Every structure is written in structure tokens, then in C-alpha cells.
Image (cartoon, rainbow, N blue to C red; front, side, top):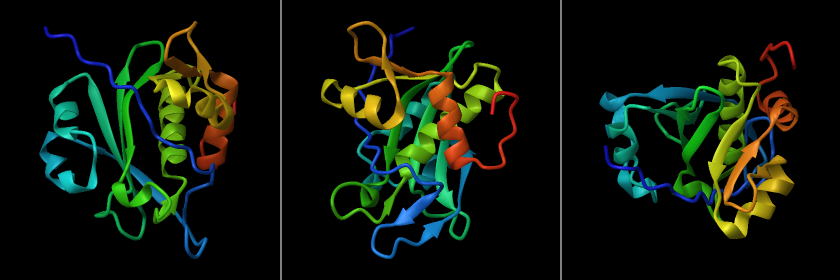
Length: 181
């Protein structure tokens, strides 16, 4: 089997919210995160994304989820891909929709919401909330400051440990019940 090229992630944590917030009005919108399957990939319009999400659907070890608002589940605010490593969750790809990036983004809190969901899934699978990902070098400090992520040695591989995962899950999923939360 061909070895998968690992992508250095460059998502920005603009704000840890408890949902997503409109940048113009500060209005908060409740969100839902829904798993996507191969039959759903037509929902992902290539024009809204930098990464080629078709590739993620082809890898059967991946789980792909979309973040939407409760009021409008047809507009995808962000996407995340997980791989279950049987002791933690690896996030090979996470992306906010183009309209949620940069100075003129529509919503803030998208990436934080998706990372918190990854931690929640890790808790649900009995992995103590641990998630890992590969960061671009210039964002290592950003992820350390905003998410409490730590580096594996001197590499670009980072992880969010249990204590930090608890904080993220509590921030975004008020009704999540776990023995450690």
C-alpha cells in the first residue's frame, strides 16, 4: 500500500468560543457536527476548500465530519478528518470553509469547535481525550498557546493531552458527560 503523504496543518484558532460567532454581529449560532460518508462527498464544493477532500474519502481508515449550524445544515462551516490510532485520534486534516478564513471571515470559532470535537471523540473511544496532528513549523507556538498542544520531541507532530482536552470539550460541549469531566 502506498504511504500517505502527511499534511502539515495550518488551521488558525481565532477564538475559543462555545459555538461559532458571527464576526459582524457577534451573534452566536449553535452548531452540529455530522459524519460524512462517500455518498455525501458531493456536499463538499471544491470552490469552498483549499484541500482535496476527495482523497480523504478514499482512505477507509478516515472518518470525515462537517460542522454546520443547527439553523442551516446545508452550509458547511468546517471539515475535519480523523484516523483512529487505537490509543488516540489523529487529525490528518482540518479546514475552515474559505469564507471563515482571513480578515474578512464570516464566523470565528470554527477550528476550535472541530478540535474540541476530536477530543470529545477521543474521550468517547476511551483514549483520554488525546488527539495528535502535524503542524506547520510556524504555527507550533500558536497551537501551544491557544490549545495547550505539546510537541513530540523536535518534530512538527503535536498532541493535545487529557487536561487540555477536558478544557476544550467543556468549552464546546456543555452536555458531554465523562468521568474525567
